Image 1 (cartoon, rainbow, N blue to C red):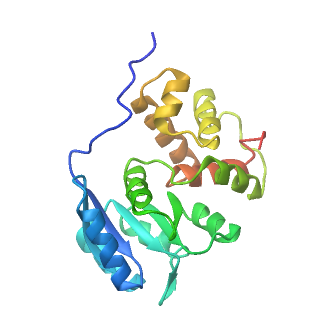
Image 2 (cartoon, rainbow, N blue to C red; image 1 turned 135 degrees about the vertical axis):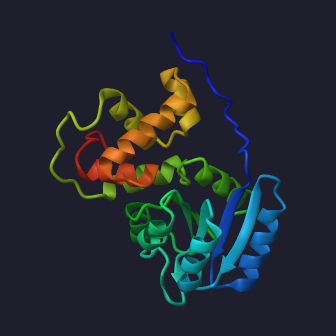
Length: 225
């Protein structure tokens, strides 16, 4: 019996807590004001250095980071594992002025939920925050299709590592589909899709859907790419 579909749009019980990490304080503060005006989002602070970011993550417990790529005391993308170690459930969206593939690939490999160009609209930033909080990937299907083949391939894992259904879900994630779209394709609930993604991510040692994809490609689990 097919499972009932859940609503595509879900309103969180608590506002999404967002921390903005950017060395341009005026721009970051302006972005914080815009996000804070949303009923389902609370901007809990602005960090202008990675050191401040680490302190604020520990004290404010954000749900989502908007993280600049270039920070005065280090590379924001390279710092992702260290920042995530302070709060493993973080959704991390990299704000970047660089669309260079090596930057984007590094962001994915380090566990980012996705990335957003600094030239994008405020509406797109807000949508990215909501997507990251929901465990979705913040990336266009076109860009995802371009980047995934760039990951090196290694030895294929045992076929028993992932279940057949988890492999099916993984392949649909590789198409750039949202959890709701995957649920519709498989005629299951969004909750079931989330459980499959959580399970396959745990097996692959990934912290985001994009990182799970990158690991799967490197391990030869998506041979059609």
